[in-house]
Image (tube, rainbow, N blue to C red; front, side, top):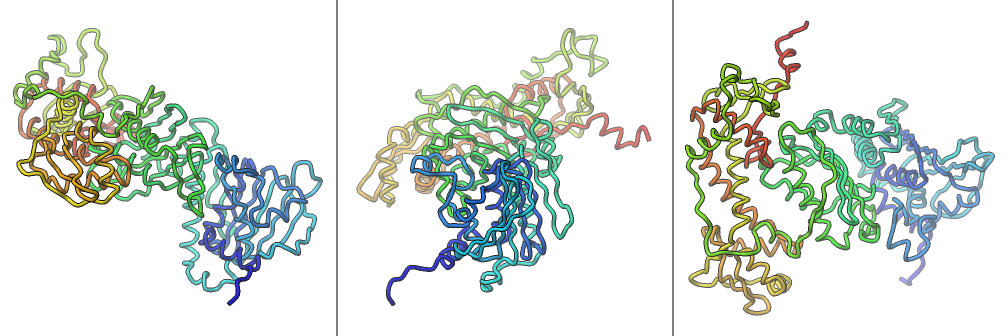
Amino acid sequence: MRIQILPPQLVNQIAAGEVVERPASVIKELLENAFDAGAGTVHVDVERGGLALIRVRDDGCGIVREDLPLALSRHATSKIATLRDLERIRSMGFRGEALPSISSVARLRLTSRTADDACGWSVVADGTEDGFEFQPAAHPPGTTVEVRDLFYNTPARRKFLRSDKTEFSHIDTLIRRMALSRFGTGFQLRHNQREILNLRPATEEHEQSARVALLCGDAFLQQSLRLDFAVGELRLTGWLGLPTFSRSQPDLQFFYVNGRLVRDKIVSHALRLAYDDVLYHGRHPAYVLHLEIDPVLVDVNAHPAKLEVRFRESGLVHDFLHRGVKRVLADHRPGQEPTATGLASVQAPAFPEAQPFGGSRTPAQAPLSFGVADQVRAYADLYRPSPKSAGSPMAAPSGQEIPALGFALAHLHGAYILAESQEGLVVVDAHAAHERITYEKLKRQWSCGAVACQPLLLPVQIAVSAAEADLVEKHGEELAALGLELSCAGPGSVLIRGIPALLDEVDAESLVRDLLSDLVLHGRSSRLEQYRHEILSTLACHGSVRANRKLTVPEMNALLREMEATENSGQCNHGRPTWVQFSTRDLDRLFLRGR
């Protein structure tokens, strides 16, 4: 068969296979066009899950009559004109394929009016990109795109669609996600002429919080940190769920890059690493985060549906997110309002993950004391109530305000501390709290000490890929700083000569393979730090207050004060909560007081 040029409608139908998967993907493209038009409010009407009708109306700038045919033609757009524009894309859409692709698989009508026109104009398209007929239309400034009978002329693709209810659920989820990306835009969603969602523009901070609570739940808003910090060309804002507010599925994770909802392995890895050792195993963090970055530093043209991006400085972005989020979580203390703003700096080290272990090394560290009795007595010395307060645990020492976790009342069943705070009743798991305190102290001491290398009696030779061997050559000194002594024994072979002394019982080959695999995939590795965390966590657990160990009031109060000063004290090393608070209102409601 001879080579031939495909007809425009078939070309558009092929393109539609990339951007028009289901009704929700049609709405995504139309909403992005509305955002680029500067819409203050968008109205979305669907019938039968979008299979019968999709209508998106906005109050944006509109399209002049002469440009309507161009809007329905491939690769025609007002958003880019040169290669320089393509390298610094600020708009949501830029390919000029959405409308012609949709019109090739559905019946599409485009109606628009600019503020300077006396009336609007309407045109019908079928994907052929010719034969357009204009008709005047009564229309306010803005644009309406009406899509009927999706996939009517491609029945094979229509068979892959699900029930009306399922397709609408995808639409509802999409609009809620996009509403979290554009707080300044109002959204109205109707299904089968019934209003489902009506969100007004949210410009003030309390209005934005109210939208987050509506779309993500009150529990998420109440148990999240409001953050806003920047370093250089990067700025991160949004809501960060506390480790104790976790999910069984990653269904409350929304990450936006310059207003665009994306899925990115670098981002996911950085945020997962930031929650390392504070999240219960098998659980997923929740967040609504917005990354603002110079468009030159991010490529949004890496996926047909624009769901993925490519960062030009992926290591910088990873470290900015990882260290920034980790610091926000660590800095949150009991009694603080759930807000974090103005983080001063998040430095990216030359070799990621090397810095926490410390740069200089000494032959040995000072011995660490794990004596429980010694530590508890030290805690007791930190706080001694005055004689006046002996009969009233809630009475603060002279000149001292009531602290966030209050003052101890009793030690229940040898496990739980009951304390009276300004807000109500605080219940603390003494072992879990002490475990976190001990763990954080061990981490600090370890980071300031040596990463001693334990030479192997016989070097272990392993086969690796060429890329992995290059990494060993490139980062040999940095790996040695982590206690790993590796050398290349050929193009596809590496010799393991030594491993960190603290990890002497770890399978050396598995450790190195996992580390090199992480370095190839992410440009960094958290394996060593994870192993270190596990070992230090075990030591901390054995060095903490055990259950049924009766604590005195001074000891309990001293432990509460330590919790207030310790990073990540809201959860133990395994991610379980260390304390909960019942406000007086909660207690009144429990006992039906005031009814």
